[in-house]
Image: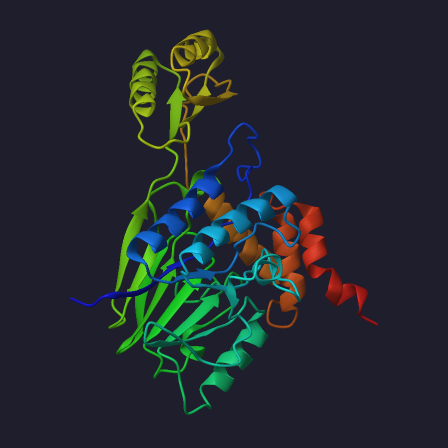
Length: 363
């Protein structure tokens, strides 16, 4: 059985209030990253952070302090940490390298480096044209790495035209493994015979469409991969418009209270006005649960339905609609900026800061 060479994690989005719509929920991102460092120290293998370490290009002092504390832990045990930048935190001077001496910045893609005998190369998030050029240039070199790290939305995982910014076929076929961040879920697939690609998954949920098991990727010395589960906050969506559904709701509450995560569980409850007082009373008996309520008035004959895929499907269709009026191949930066501005989970000011250099310096 092969030994682990390193663990890879992406999309940390370090921010105490990562559920921006719900300010009472905090700590998910910090707890997720703490587990990543815990696992690295337990296995004593290097950690590779594949982008979106921070949730913005201008993280707050509290976020920087937390990141420094985690890097102090790694430095004390001499555990290497490698970083690339994602689309949320990319700056000319990378934050991780700027605020602490320990993390090793590898996102410039200029040379190979070795982690536990495995040859690797990393690339920061880039526009479609830029990453295609960088990967095609890599293919002209004789000394190819065994692993390429990226932070991109690849065509093979997101096939809707206009929503991807990288094609895995641009990666040289003699590179056996591609490890990526960006899409916040577990995904893996063969690209060509003898070539595999993996998304690391996120460390926590940021909205209702991201619920499910979180994990980090363990890359072995023989380039096989496994996933190590992370503990995350329990989140339960519930609809209450009948007595039977109310009984189900109270059952869900009792199960959430017994949750093993140190983060308080959350119940998202959509209910009709008739059940408002009963929902509140039941939640008061479960003081460890954050209850987020949405009261819904139903027309006669309507039923109350929770569709957890609605937000994700909207984002996908939004990219497709935007592509019809703003060609992402011709205007990749503008397309990305507008798409982010239309996404209500992003803060407009941070998006404009991220893209400002291009427009401020434009003639």
